[in-house]
Image 1 (cartoon, rainbow, N blue to C red):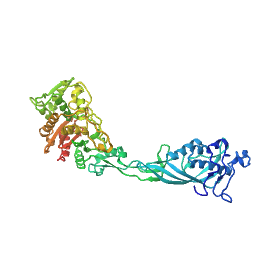
Image 2: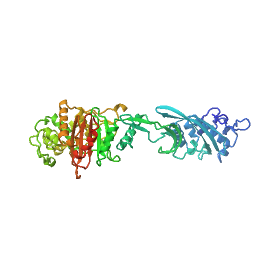
Image 3: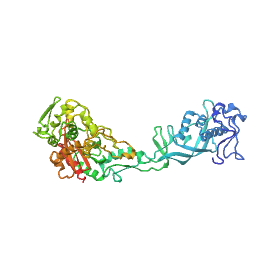
Image 4: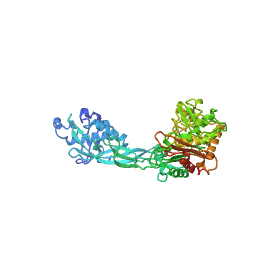
Length: 554
């Protein structure tokens, strides 16, 4: 403490006893600026020979003011909140506030020095340090201020006590307010990086705005970001009323992603041509997401979280199931009648076409509905859902690194089960899941799509318990290649060379005049899917979007 201003208690600070025996337990205390020799000694109240009854009336005498202030400030300085609070007229509130000062504000190494009393009011200074943690390490910062207390007579006992109010703790504090350390910023500064290590921005890629915000918030801790630290006056709800002192400056964090800026740019340009369009691009060999695009970046994130019937694009999964079950083979004859009734429903093909004497490859490339519906009687109700999950990973929980809907293929029966085979019924997908379906075929096995590399935060990616046999994978690639070169996807895929495959889809929606257009395909090590709601045929409206992105896959 400062020389000449320290409050001291001679003979030991038996503070807790003060409320029982008055202040006689205290010996002589010292205030700076006393008479003559500067000690200003004052005898304890019960040893002065004064009339005790007289001291119970009117304001406390100067000796009482000095002694009560000394007891309170000394107990506070020594960290004994209970004893200090016992010397106030509101022990409960005082103790809570004093304890919070250490616990919430991190006040430590406290030194309190009193000035001269004046009409019952004692000014004092506080010299302390604020302990706080930054980036996992403990730090301290100096903290000092001036305040004052007032000694009054207790309404109940008549004893001199400190009149408790929040401003005793810190000048200007009001009821319900306290001191606390907290973040300097409400949100951390987190940079989200592309696959090249450059910063992605919503200004350059508007479609990524919601994804970038989600990734930055989700990975704040792993990014190494620090919001900074400050000492604040806060209200009862913890909201900052006033920032008193900056303790540590914020630091920017970084989160890596798999976004390829060239592919992202192409996807954003492609979806801009169709209202409500969305697309996702995936690298089949790894599952890395290379692009996420929504024509309306301020709307719902359909690309990752949409939940739509995928129409005939889902026939890729159904074809895989039929091949596995021995119910279809690319080069073998396969029925494609105009109509097929099952479960009380009469199913038909677009424009009621039929293929006579054709193969399963012919039916697949022409997107024949009845070629799939006709096999429904041979399947168990849960066969499609199990196959979609076990081989294509659809319906598993994907740890992508941002919010996603990972596909739904519920167990249904009768006509609804049959409808699921052509991507209707209860089947629900989005561009992410349908791009993954194409990626699984091209790669020959499921790789869970991811945006943030798993090694960044140590999470486990989903693993499909089953697998495509090499023969089945080759057969599916052949079916999709035939569709891309000669079938319903040929017009959109025209001019693309290399290892290509595609499938179109047009999903009917109740109450909607036009179907949702779907298209999914791959070229070499890039798979893309797109949906254009309420538009028309998949090859016409969604196909060009996918093809424009695939042109980058040289």
